[in-house]
Amino acid sequence: MRQAIFTRGSTLRHVVNMTAASAMGLLTMFGVDMIDMYFLTLLGEQELAAAVGYAGTLIFFLVAVSIGLQIALGALVARSEGGHRRDLARRYCTSGLYFNALASLSISALAWFNLEGLLRLLGANGLTYEYALSYSRIVLPNMPILVLGMSMAAAVRAIGDARRSMWATVIGSLVNAVLDPIFIFTLGWGLEGAAWASVLARFAVMGVAWWALAGVHRMPCRITVAQFLEDIRPLLTIATPAVLTNLATPIGNGFVLRTMSQFGDSAVAGAAIMGRITPVAFCAIFALSGAVGPIIGQNAGAGLYDRVRSTLVNALLFNLVYIITVWLLLFLLADAIVAAFSATELAAELIYFYIFFLAGTFAFNGGLFISNASFNNLKHPHYATCFNFGRAVFGIVPAVYFGAKWFGPKGVMAGEVVGSVLFGTLAMVGAFVLVRRLEREHREFEPGPLSSPAVVGLETGREGPV
Image (cartoon, rainbow, N blue to C red):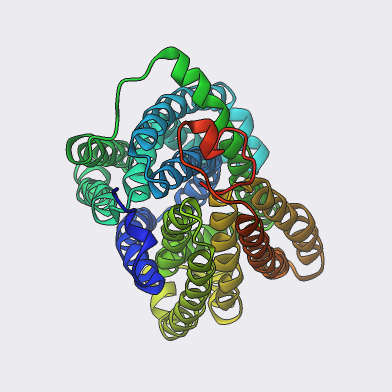
């Protein structure tokens, strides 16, 4: 019988290897986004940076949905793989790709027909609004391509091939990096050039991910309409709360941006610049959340809850050490960052404030990310939904509102981290409590042989070992 790769060997090694591979891909992707912002600041219009902030926040809503969809696909594939059911993993992979394509097409169309109102709702106006509208009209119709590319990469990662999953992101980012200066400066397309470079990069990501998924691992297979309809239920069981979980973040970000907009384009530009720098600086933490999911999923699928707990501990340790190291580097590079992005006045002041006082609190975001990955792969995605919406609704919104009222734009930034500290801590405690409960239930239930998806327990989300 074929043994799943993450059910043996050091969990720390698996965490580090998977995170390193995923981080390389995310570093190039986020790095290109940051370079986008840098190139646009060279054009000398502050409204361009603010426009990318508004458009990026809107696009992030749709990306959050796609992440929720790929979480469902990846979790089902990983658990099936851990239960020695490659046939079931292939079926879930195929059904998941079909479902994600249909869902992303529907959501993108809905956003397209309401684009102007959505940008106004975020606070965009004047020339900044026109720039944001132009950028969004190019990028938005290609969201299904991004969703499929991310979903394919997630499936490749779920069966343990982090390296090829990484290359999909790396090559797409390199395409973006090469085309950016050509489209923005050589062809003189400006902001629209940055948008078209992103579109072509998405096609590159999907192409490489498809090669790894279908050409190397032969994962997609023929399924019947009846099988697809049957698989929608387990997909929605995870995808629905996962999408809601991921929507909490852009909802919170949207409120933050809307609140920040009252202080002018300079404040929005400063927040947008930090919004590009933060993912680059903490790319390993974003990667960590995606990396631990397959490890937890495969070990939970095999009933190895001691290894699930070990994975959580090692992931949180990695998170803490990495955040402290990067915070120190940001502190030392603060002047260079402000100069590189030509930030002045309020924008520069906000960048300094974030780097000196707030960057270290990202460790609580990391704890929340890791906990969410564990909830999604332990068949309790609704826990992740509760913690993420709690962070946005009861943490970010009131803290940002009163922070803006009492302390201005710095209060907005500081208020945003309040929810992360509180709910990140609660989520980490909740993850360990859940693992302990599942382990106890597993010991009381003798696992039987796998014979169908229903036996695996993935459709209903019911507890029980696989």
